[in-house]
Amino acid sequence: MLRAFFVHLSENPTLRSFAEKSSIGRRVSGRFVAGTDIADAVRATQAVNRSGMRVSIDNLGENVTNPDEARHSSQLYHQILDAIAANHLDANISLKLTHMGLDVDEKLAHDLVAGLVAKAASMNPPGFVRVDMEGSPYTQRTLDFVHELHRMPGNGNSVGTVIQAYMRRSEKDVEKLLAEGIRIRLCKGAYKEPAEIAFAAKSEVDASYIQLMKTLMKSGIYHGLATHDEHIIREAEAFATRERLAPDTFEFQMLYGIRRDLQQELVRKGWRVRIYIPFGTEWYPYFMRRLGERPANVLFIARNILRA
Image (cartoon, rainbow, N blue to C red; front, side, top):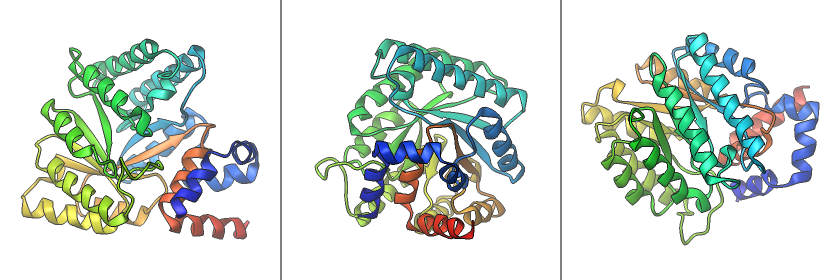
């Protein structure tokens, strides 16, 4: 119920306009969003790297409306890759296909993303592009894109995607991705989807996540387990111990500003942790979805507003 409420708020254009333009909106979002420009993302990444964790940088935005906007989004990601190399950051990039113009010109989107993957693959050390998963209308198109990009010469270990555990199709999608050696970030899922295609009950989503998680961990391919659910994290730790999986064969992934105590605990135990750091002016939809995923985030923001 809470998640659906915040997803609804994330789609409200009036609230979005107010939040993105108001100083209080920008201030309360600061816990979860690094800032509005690349320099902000670099500073946040450097701080996270110093604390022993890797980073995935995401320029927030989706559903561009014309080719020029798509090219601009792509150019920003080229600049991020340049900043990663120039500052010797332990980081990769995450992007959405709709941000690259998928709904405007599919060939243009393919060319833009292919260019970014080729650039990442040519870096020293090689970089990595994570193609994020969006709502269900884009699931198959995203997977088709990633399979094609991964097959292009030189791209092998420089592109991967995301699987959402609440989607009923995810087990079959994982099988196909693993058959080609494609790296996966496993998350629960943040979009509102109909019950015919997605699990609704938390118990079902958790069971699906744990099943897929174990498959990924035993695959011999380097994957990311994206969750703040402490029960699932303990399951992963116990499974890795039982199966004698080395700590460098997978990584936990968590969001910037959420459960920093748990992030540091995992680092102290010797596990690999990557933090997803978003930045940009279009932060409102992302921010509202994060509130919906974890009720404690709402309480945290409320305390900080009252403290002002």
